[in-house]
Image 1 (cartoon, rainbow, N blue to C red):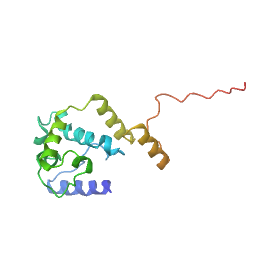
Image 2: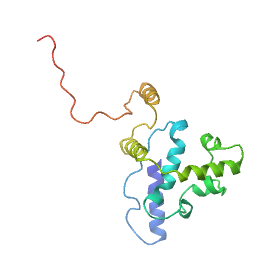
Image 3: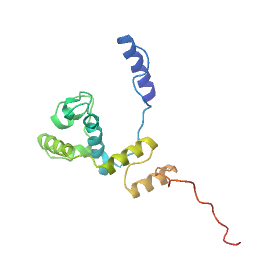
Image 4: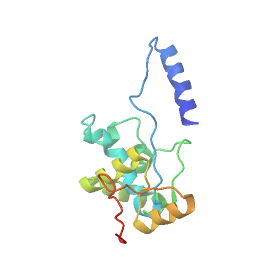
Length: 158
């Protein structure tokens, strides 16, 4: 579905602005997320990307971000607040204030690496029990393998 939407948008954009070629460098990527532990961390990661890339000084300056909705309270039909976001406060004003405070805390290098690895490799982002549960349910590996070649099994009977 995302691929189809992307192709239609590229055609529309290229026709509108008399250009040709791709708009994005890579393909769409995603990962499964343990929402209660990582969802707001991902919001923070995504909305601070333009700041980390030196495109803007403040996330509010980046027009393609959901920051305006989450931190400034600008209403849109394109976004439905997640329950984790709603848990930031009992009132809209409290949520907005707490969200802005959340984005003042820099994303740690460890979290940046975890998010990037999960997205780039299609792994789950969450705690060990969450990952084990997903592997049990899907019968697919969602955790990284150890680096290097697997060790050969030795025959203990020899």
